[in-house]
Amino acid sequence: MYICQSKDGYRYSLDPFLLADFTSAAKGDRIVDLGAGNGILSLLLARKFKKSRILGFEIQDSLVEIARKNVLINRLEHRIEIIKGDIKNIHSLFKQGSFDITVCNPPYRKIGSGRINPNPEKAIARHEIAITLPELLRGCEYILRDLGRAFFIYHPSRLEELLQGMKESGINPCCIRFIHSKTDGEAKMVLIEGVKNGTEELIIMDQLIISPSSHIPQ
Image 1 (cartoon, rainbow, N blue to C red):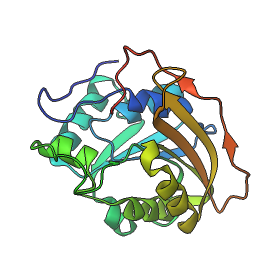
Image 2: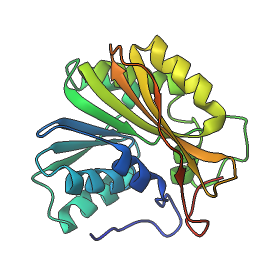
Image 3: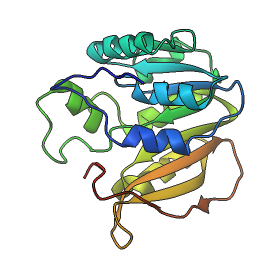
Image 4: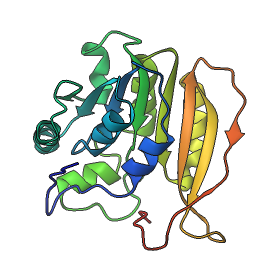
């Protein structure tokens, strides 16, 4: 797989690989990647789910351009579409319940927490500049069909907030997996699955230990 990305702007980390591995889908499911960045997650999902069509939804013009280029050089334009749009206005672009699966690697730092990167691509990817968590969850709930599934990778420090927000948005959390860089260390990230209007009980999977040499955002 060939990936173009900016030297100075947004660059993918291990997160999309972990999220793609965690995501499950049935044959032919319609998948939307909310906040597609340079398209890395959409490409990984296209390789994993060969019978599914994937829409990458991205707000930044520069990243939309790179993502579209990545789709073309990997010859996946017949299965992946990248469009520019704001998740807050997703209701103006799609009918309610248009997708079976949503995947998202959202910004997990609130405005005022930590230094905001001077590069806009990095800043929007890390801080809630373009969208807040409640706004994102409302978009997920709207775009998902009944019993559709949502998959997230997020920071553990805001896990309680995410789980509560999912419930309030009608997305029932059903599976959690914590990601650690070492067996006896604290969780660095967490994977969450939810079902729109679901009733499944919450399952805590075995922790996932990543090699210390791998890059996990701090």
